[in-house]
Length: 196
Image (cartoon, rainbow, N blue to C red; front, side):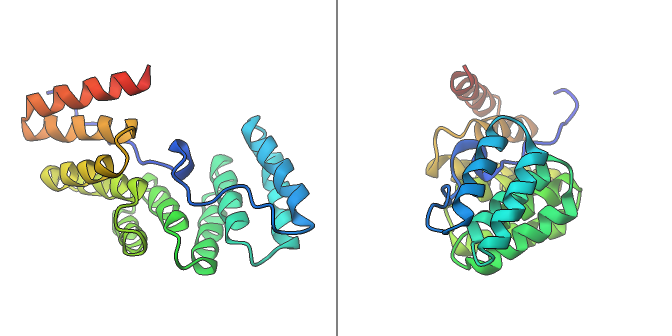
């Protein structure tokens, strides 16, 4: 067994699991939203932040725009502003786990595991089988040394989304910590196949 490394938290949109799409029913904000999306896809995150801010100003009640703004703020390292955008997105859309999952992911990255757990538990109350939140809850368990619980969370994420490469990777690490070489090898093989 090599040195332990932290498993990968999973962004909602990293694997297309966000419940949001580009909002087109937001009137005058739609043009800025489309421009922001294009800028983000091209890696121009600072430009995307400014365009999403304009779109949010034009459609302040849009949870999806706040969510997208949060993603771009996180991409440019503005963590506290990203957290604020994700909290507002979660407030505006109490049925969606997306904003809460992103809050959990950012809190994991900051080493604030208690705050991450709270946000992710709320995301899972909203949608118990939501793969990114299940994966990220597994990351919290792993980082707290609860490898069996982490493996269970990664498996739940994989039951809901068997093509989730990050969850396979994380499951391999958890199995390794548990001494389950067969489980580790199977998970690594699945990860490699998905990552080709």
